[in-house]
Image (cartoon, rainbow, N blue to C red):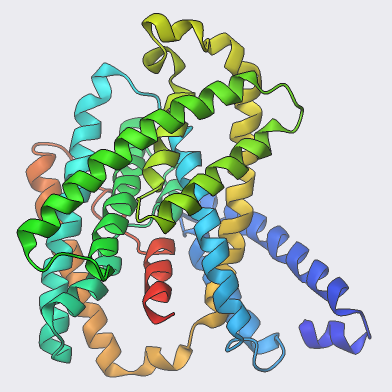
Length: 369
């Protein structure tokens, strides 16, 4: 396609516009196919990216610009994906048990998987345990970028469980990874655990304060372009927080939850500041903008990742063997904790919905930068 367009002597900017437009249109078709076949649309996008390798100009796969764009698009997409999920979640007393169970499964499955995979990496590659653990954590994080658009057809309780679990997995995984790869990390496990706990408390306090301020801004800004202004502020907060080692996804999650549950969070004296009926007229528009922006960014992230994949590694039997061991560990740990924490309940299809995706790719790119 690219070679054909080049032969027509079109300017590069027109080729780029046409290619980007076609990718979005194809992604929309993939969403339709996914709903009919239950094949995740992101898998189809990856295959599209792999296919583009064969029709794109030579050297595109190894272009460093692809790697840089992949990281930027991935991080912005992650913000919008978590925000999209939070805007879908209604908090009620009867859902407290579901939230706690999803949090527990996310935390225990992440830690259990990371420790066992680290031992496997240490055995196979003869690396130190800490280095092995740094590589194991990204592999242990469930992908909210894949889960959230893939669970729409599930019953509400299972859908919400998966959304909460994948979002918590993202957040816990990033915090865990940041401390493992930090040059200032303490040398002992006890000091690391204490630092993680203190950092989490500080982050939650900041997240709650900023979320209230942002929701108040959301209500009081009268400009017609305030929706993207709020998204820009959230991205700025995420970037600044990340620079200072704060897991800024928590801020994004809290903002979405508070905005979608005004009556729960603005009570007593705070009820005078923001009222649900004042938010409703623009909340729907904000939700749609977030949903569609996340769709576009998710599309380009997975297509670009498909373009950057080296297919030759798939034919290496060592890679296949390591992959099978890691997948077996992930499902064994997931089965164990789902059985323990969802005792007496069906764990299908939750057991099988355990994809790795956007966060895993971003963290690995972070390590090789």
